[in-house]
Image (cartoon, rainbow, N blue to C red; front, side):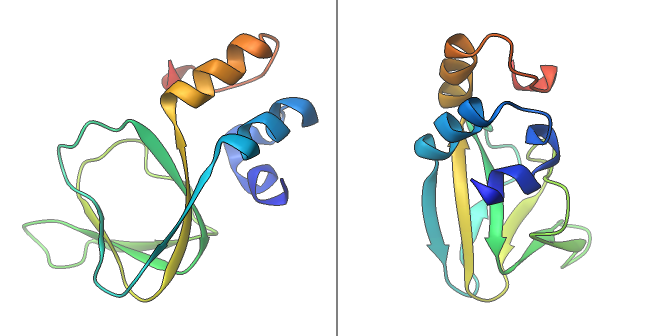
Length: 114
């Protein structure tokens, strides 16, 4: 649950709500060069970086920027994202967030998730 508390949009949430979200998360390990998402994809889940560095790639520039566990999450899929080295990510689907919100309607969650 500590990881969820580090995510800005979850900081003001109730512990019970966060616990429910953490139970719904899926863990992934990516190896160097693995593509995590592609530009234009429908974003059905959000990724939380637990460890590692990801590279945001644009056609115009080979590596636009990189993000790590300390960086804020990308708001939408506007570029390809790949793992630079070994990375550990957690994903949380939109459906799981909405399900948790039904169980905890008083939860403080960003309106962009709906």
